[in-house]
Amino acid sequence: MAGPAPNTLARSITESVTLAIAARAAALRAAGRDVISLGAGEPDFPTPEPVASAGVSAIRGGQTRYTAAAGLPELRAAAAEWFQSQFGLRFTPRQVMASSGAKGALHMALTCLVEPGDAVLLLAPYWVSYPDLVRIARGRPHVLEPVPDQGFVHRGEQIARAAREQGAKGIILNFPGNPSGAVPTAAELRDIVDAAAAAGLWILSDEIYATLLYDGAEHHSPAALPGGRERTLIVNGGAKSHSFTGWRLGFLAGPEPVIDAAVRIQSQVLGNPCTISQIAAIEICRGDHREENARRLQAFDERRRFLVEEINRIPLLRLEPPRGAFYALVDARELCASLDLDDVALCEALLEDGLVATVPGSAFAIPGHLRLSYAASTKEIREAVARIARFVAARAT
Ligand SMILES: Cc1ncc(COP(=O)(O)O)c(C=O)c1O
Image (cartoon, rainbow, N blue to C red; front, top):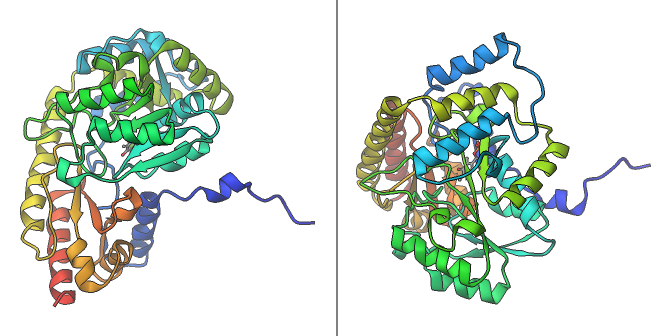
C-alpha cells in the first residue's frame, strides 16, 4: 500500500525562493567556493546587546514555560506602547498579539480574514511569501502588474478597478516594500486607503521595514488614515530593525475581534510564540535603542548610496535609489536581452560563475530584475559589485 501523500494544496506550495537561494549559496560555500550572498533579507548586525541579554536572563531565570497564546500580558502592553511611541498608533494590549515572526502574524491574520475562494490583491513586485500565504488560507491571490513609472506605488484607481473586476475582499500592502524599497507619500497612501475603503477591502499592512527610511522618506500606516483604522491589520516587529530574525517574534495589531480569532487559531496551531523571545521583545519595545538604530540606519544608507552609484556604472544595469528597507531592485532587462537569458538563468549564472547570490525578479513578479540585499557588510558589497561588473564585462559583448 502506498504511504500518505500531501494533498493538492500542499503540493502546490513552493519553497521560499529566497531561502532556497540562501541554501544554494551555503552549499557552494560548504564545497569551498567563495560565494558572497546578497540574497538574504537579514541584517548582518548582531542582535543588540540589551535585547540579547534579556533573552539570556530569561533562560537563566527559568522563564522558559508556556505563556498565554497571545503572548505575555507584559509584552502585549509593551508592544501597544511601542506602536504608540514609534508610529503614533493607539492600540490597547488586547488589540495586539505576538506571533512567531512577521510570517506567523501574516499567517494568523490571513487564516482569520480569508473565506475560501476570496480574491486578495497583491501589488507586484510583492514579497515572495504573500501568494502562498494567501493560498494556504484558501484564498485566491490576484496580482496587479508593477508600476515602475509610478515609483512602484499603485494608484487608488488601479486598485479600485482590480477590486471591482475580481470581487476582491482584501489587499496586502507592504511599505517600505520588499523588493522595491517603495515608500508612498501620505497623499499616495491616502488614495490607496480611500480605494480600499470604497471597495470594502480589508487591508493587511506589512510594516516590518517601517523604521528603515532614506532621503527624508516618511512612514505612514493605513491604520492612521481616515477609513483605514477599522479595516487594517498591521504586521510589524523587530526582525529587521533589531536583527531579531532568528528569534522568530512578530506582532499583529488591529481590530479586537480579528485579534481574538487569530489568538484562538494560534492557540491551536502554535500554543505560544517562544517565551524567551517574548521577553527579549519587551526590551525591544521598552529599551532606548535610538543611538544604535541611527548607527545601523546610517550604515545601510551608505551601502545603499554606494550600490546605486556603482550599479549604475555597470553597462546594461539600472538602479533607481530605493527609499526604504534594505534591497536594491536592479533593472537587468537589457542585460538579460543581451545574454539571451531570463532573470532566473542570469541569477544562476551569476551565482555559479560570478560567485554572487542574488534573487531573480520573477520571484517577486517582476521578471528581468535582480534583487540585491544590502544588509551585508560594506566589504562584501564592494567585492560583490566588482564581481558583477567583471561578470557583465566578460559575458556581454
Ligand atoms: C516584507 C516582509 N514581511 C515579512 C518578513 C518575515 O519576517 P519574519 O522574519 O519576522 O517572519 C520578511 C522577511 O524577509 C519580509 O521581507
